[in-house]
Image (cartoon, rainbow, N blue to C red; front, side, top):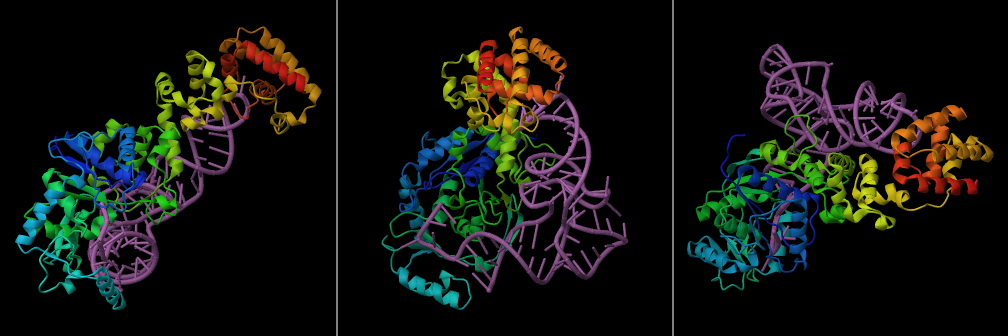
Length: 478
RNA sequence: GGCCCCAUCGUCUAAUGGUUAGGACACCGGGUUUUCAUCCCGGCAACCGGGGUUCGAAUCCCCGUGGGGUCACCA
């Protein structure tokens, strides 16, 4: 790939709770651009709304990003040359820029009460017109003493601009209005301070989701007033919720990204999934490593429409990533997911078990359901053979006789896979039974589980002592 | 309501004027000596509608329709 100018991208969440797939995907795209160009990824905190702020959010967000591997070069915890990276600590900077706009006649104090504003809005709504503050712009606004909101004095005009995802965009002058720069509590609005910060932090790209697109003309107007050349603007479509229409939201059950960590999803799989939700490289490749994504990601190949979050696809993709892992690597990752009975088992034994279930594991939290019988003798469960369409036709005495013969064959085995395979095959001939009957019976007897890896492999891992003990338990119950 | 964005199988998507509209997930069959899974093979299934432009349109233009966003002292 041709060398590109190092990009400085940022992710700027507000600390109002956990992050779900939608928000994190925006962060991922920004991170990919930074890494791809050898630039910097910045984590800035937009904590200017003290009412909505949720305690502990910033830490939670950082944990989420770290888990996914989206590391940042500058940010609220690590600092950097353009700090502070917390907006609440940059108030004097915003004040300077606000004063400058006031001095230039491009900002003014808003004299209205919230009630008066509501009235204006209702009037606009009744007239079926959009509410524009500039229609009510006061002729002689009071001096700004900080107790009133400070508004930008816009210069409405049409705009044509380029969006890295959506392409060429256009709006008329009605999209430009006088918006609040500084609230009456002294904090700046997002609309104002993100522009100052992006400038001072030398951000080259602003990558954000759809809901901001209607505000871009206002930003363009402010950039002009400030004499700033806008950075690359990129609008990422929404990730849609289960209904496929509205954007994914916490209210509709969007999960905390760290829930996926708790359930044993692989961060690489989630990154792959989020990237493929709205982006592809034009080939038929579905599974990408993070390194491949860094190399291949392109903003101009991001989808323009929203993409529905499909958990089935995530499940499949996670399974695919699990299967791509070397057993030893997988073993490290599933460390915290073993069933209670696995406590005393050796590393070697657990690794053997894991190797057998690797291909059927979709996420690590499934491990206990798949492997408990390798560690614990489960109670004999008659439903397993009574509900089996092959076995339920046989009398208890026949089952017993088959199990006795199996026991004798297994007693003679050294429990290596080849030897077990051979003896089980011989047993088929000896008993004249179909594998569906004989193997099901032995499998159920030795596992007491509805599903397990293939019989010889399972027996080899369980070992002779355990296998025979369980055979006896089943014989006693028949 | 104004402005803006979007529109291919159920879902994620490919196609950059010429393809039997391709792939993946899901689903349904079949195979891999039992089960669950993996893997392999097969099947089902889409260009929102109408007009243009063109020899030729999923692709370009226009008009509809549908969905979404925005019009906060939230971001």
